Image (tube, rainbow, N blue to C red; front, side):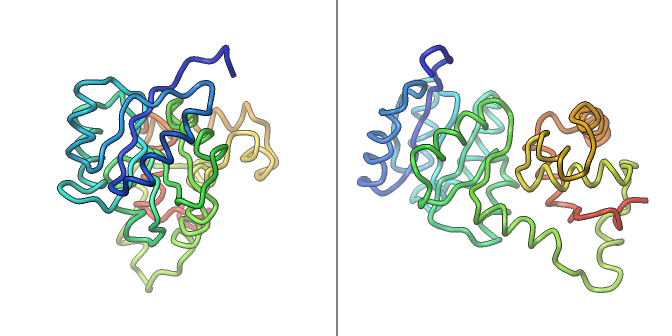
Length: 227
């Protein structure tokens, strides 16, 4: 990995032992440099103003300023900085709040060094990164039955997505890369890229994180929701 650009990471976690452990853990990865560590969201914002970072590795439940509000402010004031959540909590409300605030990825604290490093690299490149437990919850939420008429009330496809574009967005929300999407839909990767570009243009998505938030917000799960 020595030839790759160094990823500057800011760690935010209110537990000192966890914070120090993450700093030591990430210090073992060649292409990652920890530029600071904070015990709450307010401290993370202060450090970010002093030490530029590419990614903030963000806990959610912290004093003074929690991770959700800190994420929202980082996305607003430092749009060039990605936020990757690393937390104990994997409930639907926490996941939705973090993604709604603009987090590009979400891991739980049982993640190992290799998974955290891979997620940091993904978020820096504009991709989404979810731990296995989070991906399963997102899929279940997307497939959860709605009361009669609720789905139509929530989403009437104002962006005029095609059935295939809906499928592609749903698979992006599951954390699939283009190769896996192509295999799942039995189409070529070039075709996948075309559907992604068309869908992103229609919904105004800049990256896979935006697309994931759109898919989760609108409950896209299959062809039955397309026109």
